[in-house]
Image (cartoon, rainbow over all chains, first blue to last red):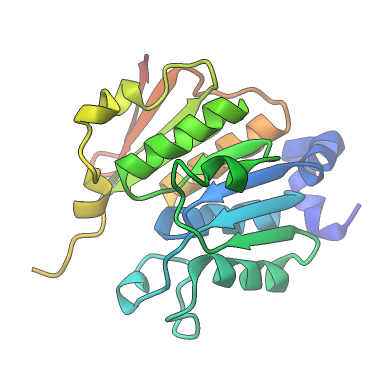
Length: 187
Length: 41
């Protein structure tokens, strides 16, 4: 096995490492949360990653978004992620999708994934992601960051899901506190 | 970073069939107090 994974084996074992190499993860969002999760997945040795983000890097991202560098300013976040992966672990197949995830395109973007990672920044998009995950019967790991606080939950296709956190979608605000508290604008 | 590491760890555990600690739970992390709370749904 590749020496790059030698220090994984004590935790994952050979079988676990082999399994990881055969998996396909879809990451929705390549910002503060998604960029770091992407980096960990690439280094860990996930076989294939679909990374989805329509946005481009701006100077305000530089304080916390791993994939934001002075070089990537103005570049699409998903494309920057793919380039980063080619530098860190070229064995990983990365599909960069420069799309905003919606109900209309979510199933197509996520098809074939074994696991979906919710690294989005607003609640409506999170519900759209969850709907598609349920239809495709793919488990999802939700996470959100707000300043010094954060939350994580596994959403099974038949589980209670985001409603348990945010209430019904019709009553959920468009943006969660992660967009106002987690990345506050200058006073 | 801490939240991303926890999300990635959970993902790797699921992908390698090592179960998921957070099944039917919400884990909330507050680094103001360095606390992790788990809520069963």
